[in-house]
Image 1 (tube, one colour):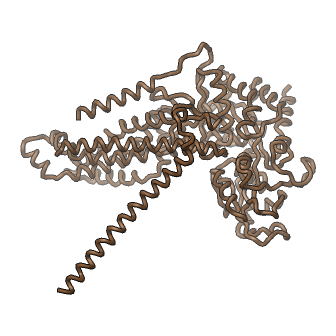
Image 2 (cartoon, rainbow over the protein chains, first blue to last red; image 1 turned 120 degrees about the vertical axis):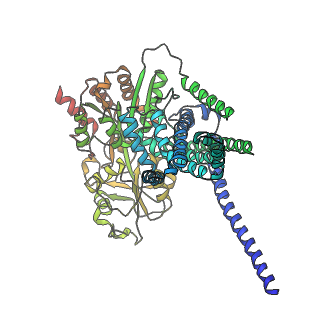
Image 3 (cartoon, rainbow over the protein chains, first blue to last red; image 1 turned 45 degrees about the horizontal axis):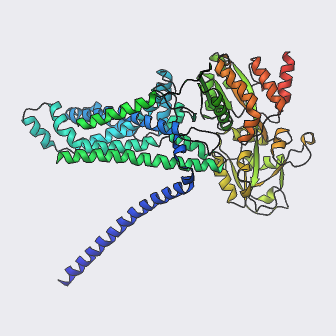
Length: 290
Length: 343
């Protein structure tokens, strides 16, 4: 009796220690984020103003603004989603719902390659984009070429995440649907996709959060640094916030470094907004399912 | 699902609407696009010129990229850009690529850039260095051998020397090795390097045993954290004794061998387009003021006139006989010699 009670005390202690460690890890990552934000806003707060957000780049740090870069980032993210989401989800549906039934050697080979592609450094995608979109298809250094390159970059992540989400849908659900006489496509559209959608959205959020901070592939395809006009269409030259930040941080003058901090202070809320929007969408779907 | 789709359509429509917004056309003939790419060292000057130029010609769009001198030349020699910013003269291989693609170019110097050699402010001993001493520190043979200050001069303290220098992909590194070691791209490997000069500034400012080199503009902005080392090339023709870098010594050629001209290269076909032609003329006419504003050293007044003449005559090719980085050149002399030879 005594022994057992001692053991349970140990159990409780273990439990408590484990909780404390988990909390500590959570706090550590949160504190790192808060410290980063505090540092950025301390450096850049004096520069954050409406004029900064709606201004064009300039050699005078106090006159410089980020409008072309901010709009460039927004347009390119929208285009990237429009391009990568349907293709990525389509590929995942094929692999999970169609190819997995046959489970051929070919589909296994493709599967391994997609997993590998997710780990390829982003600059390689930049070189690919330069060779194919900019030169071979002669799209030039345009918004479309940039978005296509970023779409390629995030595609493997979207495919893998979407497949996991589809796989998590119980097979019994599909079987029930078939038993009621539904075709494969009807089953996918009415039963499987709605259930998997929250998971697919989570994967897409992660993928886009990676894409919004990418600089290297866009510099490689020839995204510009000084653009003093708003992008006018799919074939317009463009710049994005990370490139503008990179350029300002490498200038000698401390005032430009403050500008870089302020631009980060705009990029982060944009990221929060994007992620918040996706989470809101996800919650709506989850609610409907209940 | 339907509301989501509606939302998506709404957002894309908004985006397209934003795309369609263009600037009001002014009552002025000049329009079109001028595409510039290339060196990040030259970038601040071109950015300043582009900013002023667009104020005068709001319908012309000037775009500037920072692919680096080499990356920029790759695009330039394929005919993808109109102008290339370059922190060194064009190389033979790049000229060959241009010829293959039938691209002719006009080479125009736009400013001087000095490379500063710096130490920590608490370093009281290293007031000056000769070029020979710098070579002994930086040449490949120094790796693992020259590690203490007293190995350079006997009377200096027996402390470790910590080296900081520009990254091997930068034009600054190319030029420094050519000027000091005597061979472009050849140096010891055991030093802290960064493509971002601000990182080097921080490194030297925090290390009492440091010795570093980077663009003079970065010293100007961090004067309180760094100390300059005067440079003696032991050649009395360009000034006796050790000389500090300063706007005057960089432009009058006495801060040798670490002051260098920087350039723009213009595609000859593009120069026939009125917007490009006007942009280049504007560039050379306003460079003296704008170059100073962004922290570089302007060429002598006369050199800009000669460069403008060179452009107006569409004199193609390089003044440097395809040599890449070259040391100790006076731009004014070169321009004068060239225009004299052809007249």
